[in-house]
Image (cartoon, rainbow over all chains, first blue to last red; front, side, top):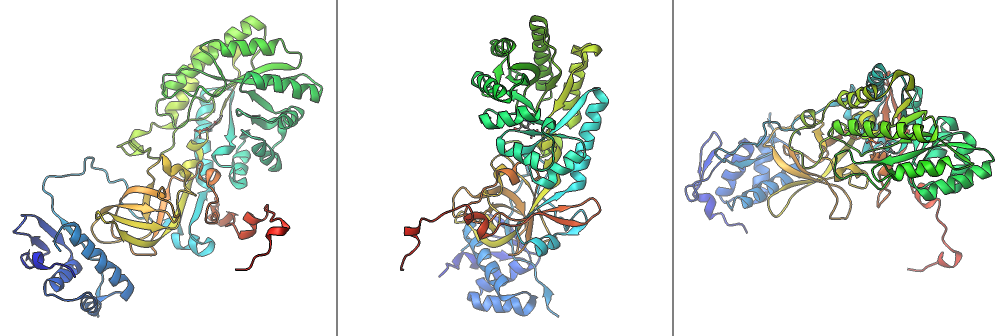
Amino acid sequence: MMDRDKLSVLAISDSGFIFDPVTGHSYTANATGLKILELLKAGKEEDEIKSAIMDEFEASDDEVTVDIQDFVENLKKYFLV
Amino acid sequence: MKKEYIKPYIKRQSAGVMNKFGVTYNKGHREDIEGIPIGRFTDEFGSPVFVLSEKVIRERYRKIYSYFSSKYPKAKMSWSYKTNYLGAVCSILHQEGETAEVVSDFEYEKARSLGVPGNRIIYNGPYKPLDSLVTAFTDGAMVNLDNFDEIIKAEEAAKKVGKKVSVGIRVNMDTGVYPQWSRFGFPIENNGAFNAVKRISHSEHLHLEGIHCHIGTFMMDPNAYKEAVKKVVQLMRKIEHEFEITISYLDFGGGFPSNNKLKGTYLPPEVAVQPVENFIDAVADTLLDELAPDEYPDVYLETGRAIVDEAGWLISTVDAVKRLPDGTKSYIIDAGVNLLYTSAWYNYKVEIDRELHGAYENSILYGPLCMNIDVVAESAFLPPLPKGTRIILSPMGAYNVTQWMQFIRYRPAVAMIMEDGKLEQIRRAEKLEDITGPEFVPDKLRKFNL
Ligand SMILES: Cc1ncc(COP(=O)(O)O)c(C=O)c1O
């Protein structure tokens, strides 16, 4: 299970600008990244996130699976989860 | 309609940190090589595949030879086989007029088998088996001797051939570059070279005709060639004076750099590497300064990588995407250090076959070998690459298709784009029989039950 507490405090703007009031770091993300982040913040599981992405975007199951994992790894790198 | 999918990314903003140099060397994609789409190479020959360009080889050669011959009247060039001895590559350069420069019995036989007459071969190198010297002397090849034992071996070979034969000596010297390549040839500085000449001049079987040197490879400073030319001409004068010998050729080897990016250099090669003309100027201008017109000997260059490096690419394919525990993005591609000998000292140019969106990251390219050392690029600045993306690495024409090894996997095909735009396979991918062919399994080992 990943720790999502840190995500809950993030301020996320529609334009992709993300601010972490705890650390003072800011981030930018693209539309796909933002979508995943919102869904994670809302407590969704990876499978649900995947279907949501595939409903909205033209992409294969395999590709999205790998990309979500990679995105989460990236969040870990930034200590956001 | 669903929206176009772009790989997700998130990136921390860091204020005030800029790339140290404004140039991002790896940024860019290429959809074709000389008009042929990247996918066609892999469709026809599989992945990975080496690609060479006939046009670029000829252009590079002509540029160097025409400049050299416009500056020195008796300019000659000899193709350094070890740089790339694929039959097609050597044949292009022989068509252009280059003789063959070989450094082993195998290379000698290969040149002969391509149709190069023995008296159009320069035979160099620190180890020449006796039989190969006999062949070379019989054929009338130019043989440059490396050490005193080899002088004795050459006498033995000449005796077998039954005639007095011409030889050259390889010399080394301090040209101000470090490290000095002192393990090849006779040193000029402590009279080693002079003593070798003295020894040869007493020989009933040998006759000294030339002086050869090769001061190093990927030389960054043309001044080293000025030094080399001065010292070799001085030696020539001294020899001609003391022994009444006429030196008919000088050979300054290879060593001019290609537009590749040496590890540890920050500037891109377009900035860091001087144009090849500067190196030729160093050789030719110094020769003209030092020599009187009636004493001009033939002068050879054995330029290797500066001719062929930029005529080659390797196309490989992303097989897996991995994020390392420390957050670094990495890719596993299907070509490793087994094929890319030069990855040890170059940071190749990395291009991808399509335009991709997403945040660029410094990424590692790993090869397919089950070995920790199999790192093809330590830090390539790349957008997120989907599996299946083709990666084009260059320059790739020098030393890889000779120094590659058969380890774990088959060596791939090599394709050549011909001047008329046709695509030819010049070496097929290896098969099991290529590797097991020379093996024998003793009878008693043939049966087992598992
Ligand atoms: C004797 C000799 N000649 C020519 C060459 C070709 O050198 P380069 O590729 O640096 O031009 C070499 C390479 O090491 C060599 O040893």
